[in-house]
Image (tube, rainbow, N blue to C red; front, side, top):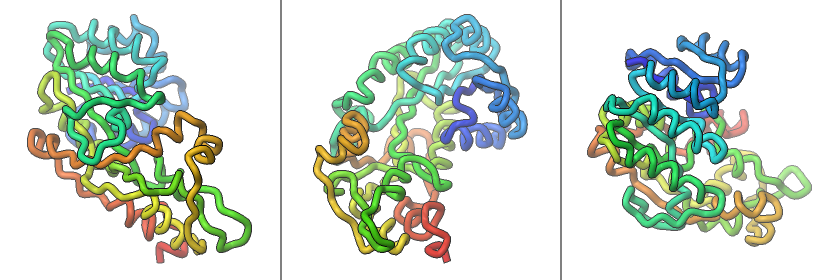
Amino acid sequence: MTILLTGATGYIGSSVLPRLLEEGHGVTALVRDEAKAEAVRAAGGTAVVGDATDAELVTRLARESDGVIHLASGSDVDPVFIPAVLDGLAGSGKPFVHTGGVWSYGSNDDIAEDSPVAAPALTAWRAATEALVLGADGVRGTVVVPSIVYGHGKGLARVVVDAPRGEGDDAPLRLIGDGSQHWATVHVDDLAALYVLALEHGTAGSVYIGASGANPTVRELGELAAAAAGASGVEAETVAQAEERLGAAFAEALLLDQQARGTKARIELGWEPNGPALVDEIATGSYAPEFARG
């Protein structure tokens, strides 16, 4: 298949693009500038420079494709992009894989696809556009829901690893809140595999949570980061301090207490997440200082 892909040069897209190519698919990436286009071509894809809110362009590219994966989801993009894709794919039965987010489920110690939605302010906008994809007639619409994505030294794990410290080389590392909240996690390469499986085999109207089943607490991650960096330990902050440091909306999301297993994707799609765990990545892997890697 030839797949229309957005976000091809972003964090997740940089793993999805090569995964699609490895599976034998062609990729047409919609990118914003020539520098990103060159990166796509270097990876083996075809690039179209344009705007994801150009409805006429998006509809044409979707119609010419065998399916769409939308990674560059955003509140300013989706209200235009999603209807344009659905127009281009109308009646074709072709796949459209959209991106959701685990934060939309709020605090929950066993998140599944049918769990109640309790979105924080940061992601409250997602519900309406996801409903368009899942309810589309004549299109095989699915939504992949990434949990906290990590790997290759990037992603939200850097909020923990790069947290501020006090004065002195061994000063403690600041937690997000008191660190008692769990984070549902997934390695970016495992998540890329899930996007491709949803594209190839996902059932119309289905949601698939991308979660490895590892749900460490922020305190656990912070303590590992502190040890790797030679800090004396960790220190908690109040919710008000977290909001002041990170912004109220971002802090609210990072303070959610979430655990997920990703069981549905394993059973229905045969997904097998096997990337290194985030705790290992922080202790001695891609997030650790050079001396901690051995």
